[in-house]
Length: 126
Image (cartoon, rainbow, N blue to C red):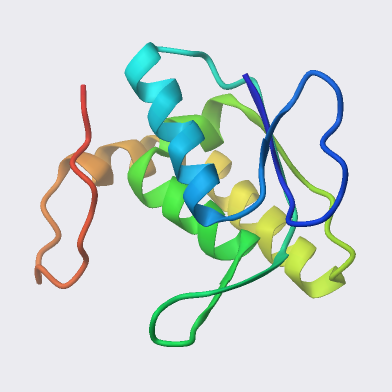
């Protein structure tokens, strides 16, 4: 599976499109449930989406969510950003680079309980 996250651009042929965070998370859940290999994810940064508290949900927000909950997809997939937002694109690329450079630590951290219980994580399925 190849996932293309973008709220407005045409979805390239051969890619599964996600227009918002809900659709993106649903594709990740489907890949988990159906044991589908994710070979690539392309992130846009500015999605025009906000949570209930009014905080912006961006491609950077979602790549961090992916790293915290399913780091193997960042480590083992081709991750790119096609955003016109230069700073947003660089933030996504920088996060991905850090995850790949520290893949062993990231995978090990996922298995540990958060020491302060302040972060709600989705349960990881082995």
